[in-house]
Amino acid sequence: MSMPAVTGHSRIGQRGHLDAWSQWSDDISAFVQTVAAASGQEIVPIGHSFGGAALLSTVLAGKLPNTRRFIVSSPALKAKVVVPQWKINLGESASRLMPRLAMSNQVDAGTLSRLPEVVAAYRTDPLVHSKISSRLFTEWQKATRDVLARAGQISIPFLILAGTGDRLIDSAGSEQLHRTAPKQSELHLLPGGYHEPFNDLGREQVFDLIEEWLKAN
Image 1 (cartoon, rainbow, N blue to C red):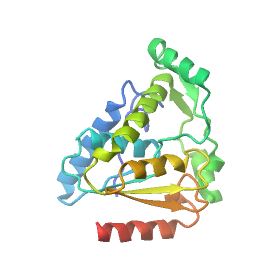
Image 2: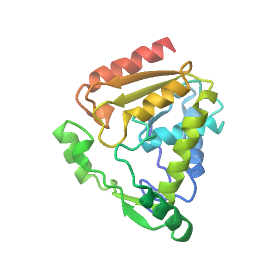
Image 3: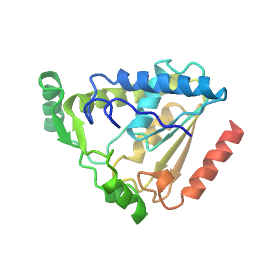
Image 4: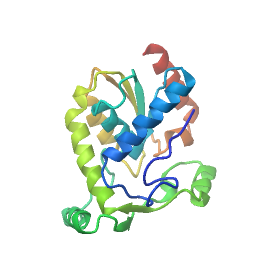
């Protein structure tokens, strides 16, 4: 398994900021193609949370021409907490005038997993940050609307994993994604699961689901 370093995360650029959502699509495309060329094997991209939304955008943009299947976990398509309209309007204004303005992403580590060691590791990870820029916020909002409107155009099979106990991202977004692309997608709702299905109670069953899906697709 390989993991990319993308704009606004790791040590690339301002933490929690990008100028355009397409930057993530470009990063993902370049990463997948590089790993595929180096390995000579099929690459099955997996996108989690914001990465899940970005992976869906990348597929819809036609930037993964050699990918024949992919997986998204807890894709960030619908926030659990409803953002007030005034705050959305403020974010849009700030995105135009002060695109790099950083705000707290209000992520509580305790909502990520039911495993104490995972929560503790998150809180001490030096690469973890708690900021989101006004531009990233508005680009994300536009991207989610586009993905949910056009998901039916995806022509390759994909697996959706979402925990029903996720307090950050609403699993209803994953359900809507599946309804929009019912033939291409397979949805597995994880009862009581938190935001990090690969780092949560019952993760062994999650890996079993992935193995079964890969064998069938």
